[in-house]
Image (cartoon, rainbow, N blue to C red; front, side, top):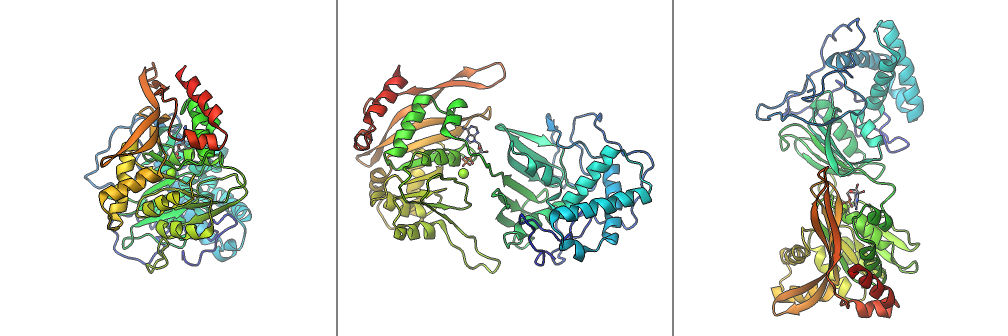
Length: 512
Ligand SMILES: Nc1ncnc2c1ncn2[C@@H]1O[C@H](COP(=O)(O)OP(=O)(O)O)[C@@H](O)[C@H]1O
Ligand SMILES: [Mg+2]
């Protein structure tokens, strides 16, 4: 069924084939996760209005009745539950199943699939409203509206994910099985009251998402990366690898990327630090941005690219295009995972190597994680100065050793010392990003690579973030301090680009 589904106007599936209770569309295979079967005889709709327990006691999250959790899982008490679109009771789900089944019996799926999403939604709304009145289900207008919305989302979109996908303030959506949905908002991770009917519905939606990029997720290939039509990055890991049901992680694509001014306003960096970063970007230093997952590396890289001259030819290499360069002369490249038959993979290394034949002036690598590190360093060394990349490390020191081990593990038979010389000769600056325990993101180091002393790469910090304490809300207080270096190593570069006065002023101001 999935293979035949045509993409809708926004790349969304338009053929209704999935919904609460609809079977998984992949060929039947032994199910590892307990899957609730569609009740053969739907419960009669209760006459009383559906309990919309707005007033229901908050507390332990309501578990989907159908989602059987393996006995090993201990349910932790949840302190904060973010209300997204209201609670849904067990009766609500029962009524929805009844109505949904009646809808599937009534509509012509083939015809519906030929309509665009908006018309199809209207069609569904008309039929559902009719079913509600025929079945004599007592519902308030608001309850009906919610049911209509939910059913349209199930048939035409990504079901219970839709209200989360629609929100721009959410950075990440994390689904840990049908009953547990978490989001990250403003740096804080919160549990929500969103849930799926059961793991089968969740699996179905995962399948829909990945089928959009021509992939499949099931027991035989339980790990899958994909991308939503809006650019959001998706990872799915399914049972039997994920013990508590299909696990879905979505990094939402932010249309309006943060700017350096935003970062200054959020106190991620001091104004002087931002000025120094601007000079680093404009004077073509080779930069590595280091940080943990979600620490703001890509955001920072995007900001730094803002200081590149408009007349430079830039080639970007990414696993999923996230960067939004403003320059007119940009070539964007993206890696490709292997297809279902395990063929056609194009790695980051392939891209970076190819990039060198494209006459780039700067190469920007979204995330360096493997042997492409070698090619990027070579590029930095051979006239593509001003190249940049991010990598996963918790300090500038660790970033250096990570890059060394990436090259070692890439199978290049080079002595360690040679690799280090290559690193110290290529990278000028390491910028460290971090997500602190209160959820705030800070640039914690601006560090220069000076050279080698014996077998060791020598670095020098220009700016550091110092934590001074905690305020009444538990938010971290701190400030960016200059280490008092008046003449960084890239001084000559800055002078070459006519920026030494600005650099001196920024460093002076930082010390003051
Ligand atoms: N300095 C910042 N202040 C507040 N939010 C930020 C900051 N930097 C990044 N973010 C947000 O954090 C999320 C993760 O950022 P991203 O740059 O993708 O992280 P990474 O590339 O390190 O995984 C995004 O939603 C982004 O908008
Ligand atoms: Mg990133």
